[in-house]
Picture 1 (cartoon, rainbow, N blue to C red):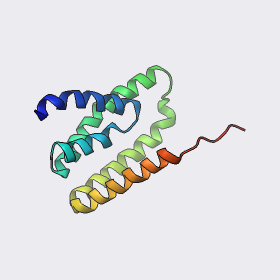
Picture 2: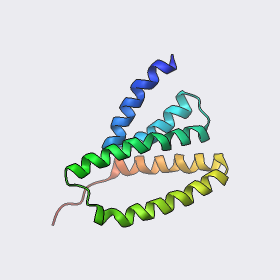
Picture 3: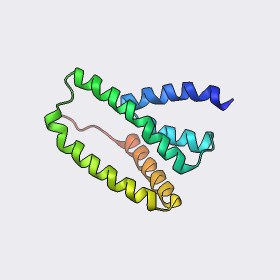
Length: 122
């Protein structure tokens, strides 16, 4: 039964990831809480899920002129270094600690979304 639901869930989460809404976070919740997958396996699938979503969204945003490669190159380089360091730590860290950190991050993100008010233009 779960296999028949997985495909539409993946489509919805891919759509949300393309919008930048947090499809990856929702995928982690789906895989661990509903599908009963181990956290480390879900984390790996989440990373692989993110790559085509990010690439597709980036290509569309670049086509619309929203992505200027020259301006974002420092962020790309720093992001790659941070990802490599985090992956190294993630492989060696206790899964329970990573779960708590991820849960806290989701709570903080949710609170920010609830209480964030855009600044008014001066």
